[in-house]
Image (cartoon, rainbow, N blue to C red):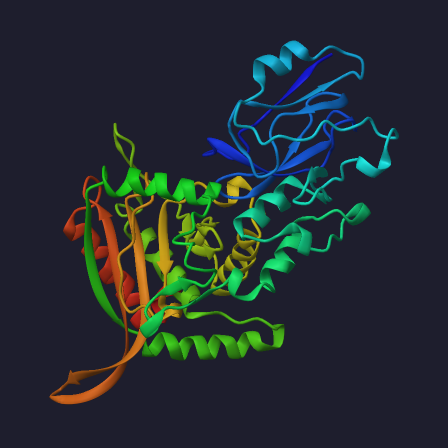
Length: 421
């Protein structure tokens, strides 16, 4: 029986996926439920499993290629079963080509390995170079001559790691160097190279789409407040003294998250969403926490953050952030937030505004703590101050509503005992 392998929706917001690597090769036997490939979604790298048994007869999407959800990307069938009608009707014109592979056992020197297909091609001068399609594409992008790259794959085949190693050691051919005057960067590969087009990852595509959906249609306005952080700094030192024996510690960001959750609990009108037909007020606080990753950012969710202690929040966000950077989060770990927090203080940013993540009605942008001179009782003193900016959806949150929430947040951070009350 012929089984079509579709690009499946592996996350709630996925519209297309990128084929990271095939774990099965054409000609391999496949069991129902067996992992076929790794797919990069808009948020994570997920496993695609077989929905039928037989032989992987045809791969229609090469590694590095993308396909919309629902498109057929491979065919599973019996070895002698006719798949001509299926392949002819479903093979995408732009799919990255894979060489026709022999049935296993016929010619072990040209069999495909699990990470990517082996391709034999004619190089300049007639020499045959063995390289995977993805390695060849990366080499082209980096202007590398594959004849100079040693292969570490089966039979000396050049694989991705070989190209990456060669590219990292290729010096001026592949690196960016400071431009004259120290401004920006310039490509040092020669005057014939004017620019470089970097392919969009699934995450970056989704970020771009979500920002357009937010900043245009959502009527943003911004409220800022300054928080005196000396007592929070002192409280963090004391808390870490208690946690030292357990090998744990909390950060200033953990205090900010805990205080934000507490303020939202007291002001559920700010913990709300626009549905188009109603304002949905949430009475459970699920905090989305922006985490920087290689392709952009991801927002893991701390559920019921208002009911969790500082140490619990600290452990949870560290674990979620680490798996987020490895693209190993499950969909329920980065969806369902009711409010978001973005902290760029650790990067030396003093103040900024965040873009709301629809359908949420607010996001908190947190800057770094700065030693700042202030006037108290006619005297100039230095205090650790932190600027916080709230982006509000004016359809849900009015100025006074947001101001009351920020005032409560300020009170909690300036007197951390209030977090526990």
